[in-house]
Image (cartoon, rainbow, N blue to C red; front, side):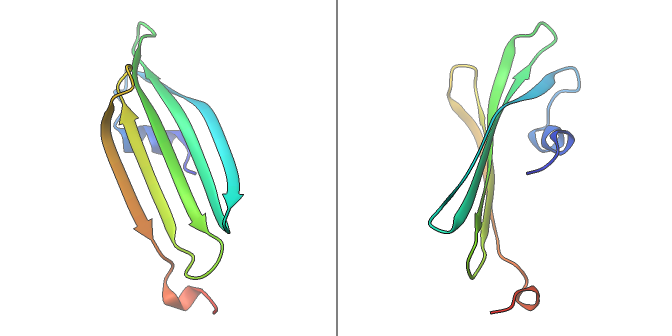
Length: 96
């Protein structure tokens, strides 16, 4: 996963707000490494502005694909924004 500073840039957090990691889970299932982090954004009055979920799923077997994503939720739990990317390694960097 990325640093908190990178996450702040990715989520486009208001510089006057704070972002704190609430939870991090990591497990392996079906030869894929799954990592999920939850974050909470608060304003200057410490009110929750949004919650975020960031994840990565890394296949541990060929073709070693990776799924990266994040979601932004309202304080009430409504999905506001979502981004998902799929990556696969360069064919020259992996031995088969």
